[in-house]
Length: 318
Image (tube, rainbow, N blue to C red; front, side, top):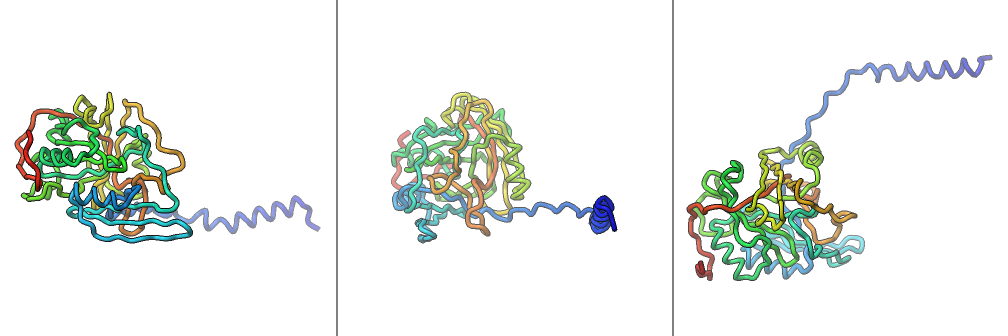
């Protein structure tokens, strides 16, 4: 009769023999991360869908494409898809359960910060138009990013907020920057969405998600700081490390980290139905918090020659 030690030894040998083919099998080559084909749009949670539609269509000249309502296990949401140029956003009102509003003291360097950047044909006329509609400003006035920064020099930018307090930005590119379509002659002032930017706490950690898992491609980097950037963000000592990622189609993604200006972490517990933003993907409805990753910061300098385009009903009050 076999002793317990002999039985245990035989069992171990049997396991090793069975596992040997697996242990000796050649390693499977690492699979490449599939590239994200398209960023569909940015999802913005709002407190009142009709108020948000009125603001985005009447002030920012988006086109209302569709409206729908979704009911699922006691949750009810009303959704409006809007388009500006080639890009789209989804405004979502969570009817039940209601979400929390953005913090009243939210700042541009908080970890929950995200904005969409709208390209304009004439930043002076766009700024005047926003001023006439009484928008809440973040920047005191449009800021020109300094020429010492080769990746951002000459860009004009202005931060403001929508009725729910979501950060928005208007941008005007100089002739040597931006996509070719932003330089084409156009009678409209608000042209489309160039990117969405989010604040992150660690650029490398964020890249492991957006680049390595989601397959977005890094297409640019910049580090912005100085008085123009401080005025633009309304953050003293703002210094941003910007990494720009992009899919083959849709607006670019920028992740922004502000290492020298104190910033607060995001709200614990995630976004949920709260009035924050997410990014919608063409295949999966809503996938993550942002379509691209950038760390950024900007400034103001002497103006460059700009094409003059007048907003309907706007007088030049300069």
